[in-house]
Image 1: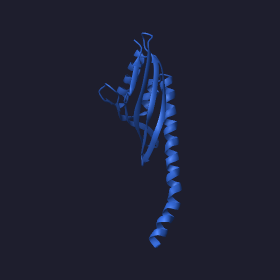
Image 2: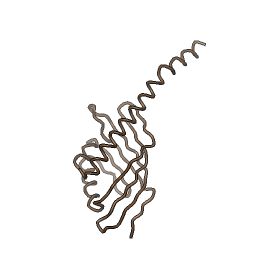
Image 3: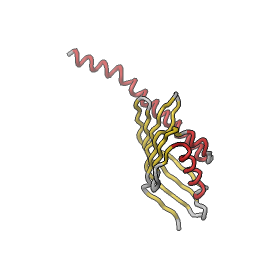
Image 4: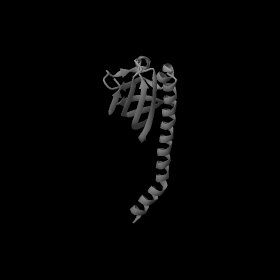
Amino acid sequence: MRRVLASWFAIIILLPAVLHATDDAKSTVAKLDEAWLKAYKLADFDRLAGMYAEDALVMAPDREPLHGRKAIREFFADDFKYVPKRSITLKSLQVDASGILLMDSGEYTFNGVNTEGKPVHMVGNYITVFKNTDGKWHTAIEIWNVRTSEESR
């Protein structure tokens, strides 16, 4: 009986703390995503790169893995050359937290117009792992795929 009471007491006391931590993680990820989207929209490649850890790893479709801020900055700058008019939306489906790590997994929708004036539309999935270093969150690992890709010919 004592174990049952102790278990219920632990659930009643700890559950609000766990739920609050989940809300905090979701709120933090939403703010990080919002800052990323703003820098992306402005084509601010230095700000974008600064959101990644020094040793970040990015795995984009049909590309070799990118290591570090410099390679990530070059990737975004190069990518914008081919599709200069663009927009992207993120829809977070699940946020998990453990210590100094946050994980956001979800869907994205990309729309743009390439340098030939042709529309580009992609929908895919992403996973981003954020790491807190010295009190600041940075993207440590990012990977995404393309579920559907349409480019008018």
